[in-house]
Image 1 (cartoon, rainbow, N blue to C red):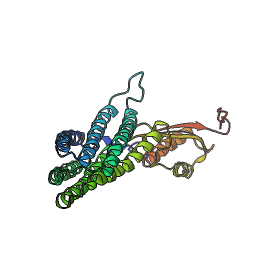
Image 2 (cartoon, one colour; image 1 turned 90 degrees about the vertical axis):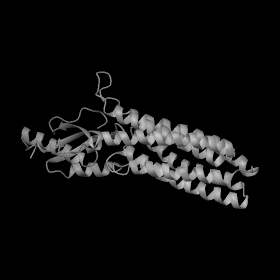
Image 3 (cartoon, rainbow, N blue to C red; image 1 turned 180 degrees about the horizontal axis):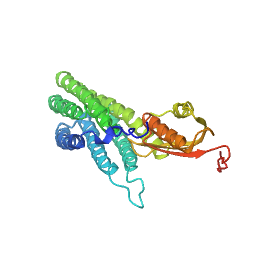
Image 4 (cartoon, helix red, strand yellow; image 1 turned 45 degrees about the vertical axis):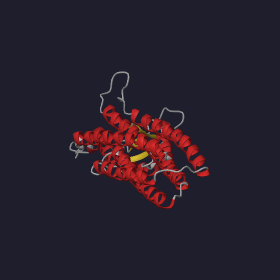
Length: 305
């Protein structure tokens, strides 16, 4: 049973890396061009909704670039100083991303509230046209990540982010059309505030998730209770303690634990059991498991056990 266990579990990274790489590059180019269009149109039409959305799309470009860099770095080989390679950079990238977004939300929110109090006349038609382009760009970019979203956390994040943006652009189109027919200029500020709340909502989870990961908490998608159960229910395991589970990167998790095995097992059987445990853990998203063996004769030396 023991040797054919590594069958294709690393599909997270090996899944058509060229295609995924290209999806990020195309997404970055498309969205950068679109931000340029939005900024110019925002200043010409004096629309804070367009500028809010441009700020948001710029943050998308930043997150796509960070995801691409992280994706490349995560594949870098470990060195003697960085024994895990640079996997953790993906988590730091997400944290930096969240902080930049929150600062942008604060600045744009202040401007949007000011606009609500003193609405400026804006050209709703141009606003609607630019936001219409946004629907195409965001929806198109989302489709680039559709295929990889089940295999890779960064791709999934990019997909969800772009789909949300496409919906925000729909809101701006509606506002632009309504403004050009009714002259309700306050809608510009109101739509900006709605956009900013949507961004705040997605940014908050990005911030809390990346903070949890930075502080080596058990990753969101893993239940320690479930992991304990998987190990303890394996035949031959009599005890488990001193378990730590943490994220090495946004796509890879690690675990260390002390396990006591039944005394009537031979050495080879114990080794086989450890192998089986690691395989089971792989199915629960634990990519790097370090398991320390104990027996009643040689108990744990750690004072905290």
